[in-house]
Length: 216
Image 1: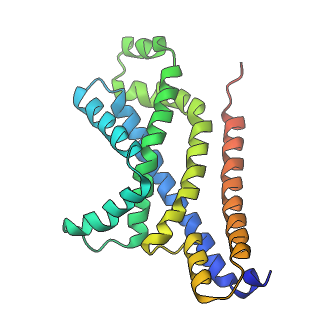
Image 2 (image 1 turned 90 degrees about the vertical axis):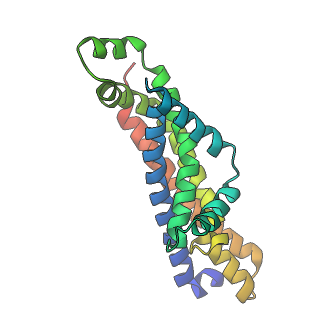
């Protein structure tokens, strides 16, 4: 218990750092994932190609490599001045967006084609049909896999500690290097902190699933 009590301020900073990193990365992933899903079902060939390339590239790139590309590659291209925290948000958000795109696209495929055809028959555009009819229904179907993906994002955020981002992983590294605490005790408190965040996310998505469930 003294590990937590003696270093409570550090644990608190790391905990809220992970929460903030998870929240902002999740928001970016949801926005990009939804946009790429729209691209992938778009009637415009160029958008379909771009969406497919985005998903294929990011799904087959290790997250650590993506972190390296973002943190080292962008400054090399002249894009300097970015804080390491926001670079981590970019890497995590873009990486997870590829998986969320596929989750949403699978939800879109569950919507009966007749609904889109009916919308087009009354003069609705592709954007109106997708935004007002298809995506609201697809989102309900995609909620469970999206919840799992955001929980995975929370755990993936530990990689950011290797790139000078203050979060729970960096707390473990600091305590291991500077203090004589039992390493297993440190890992237990770090694990409990991650469990609190993931249980909260799980509960939130379970609530959303119950609230948005379609009566059958």
